[in-house]
Length: 168
Image (cartoon, rainbow, N blue to C red; front, side):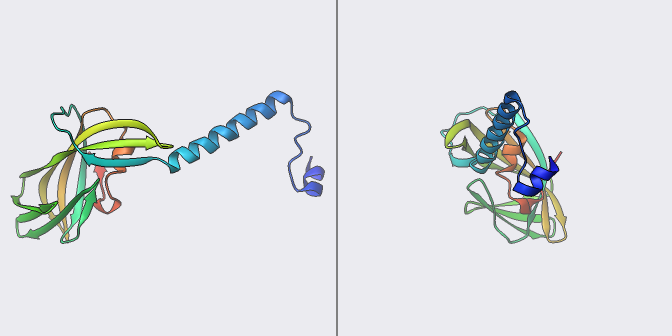
């Protein structure tokens, strides 16, 4: 078999049974479809219609850089720290928080599509609880509550890497 590979530059499959060839072909097709599906996975964030219940919760410890905008979904957040206080600006609305205080961000709707086909539709709401500062970052416990159970890997697609989200 190595002689055949060296002469032709490819694997000689003439000795494979028909069943083996079919199995290899099916596995190759499934792998290609999986790669395309992952590449086309999108999460679109829209305004919520309101009135949704949020029975599912995923918790993270996050850090937000002081004075730098961060976008979760389509919500823009900027934090500015001063001593034990912080001013949070969410989509242009400012609110002062002290350590231990929470900021609830208005609900949104997320649509997850794969290959252009809607896979999951859910409403979600984010709550940030201010924990204090660490260097130039503001630390928060972040709760992401959803109206439907959503795999954690999809929730992570909403969270920018700069937030250093750690599941708790």
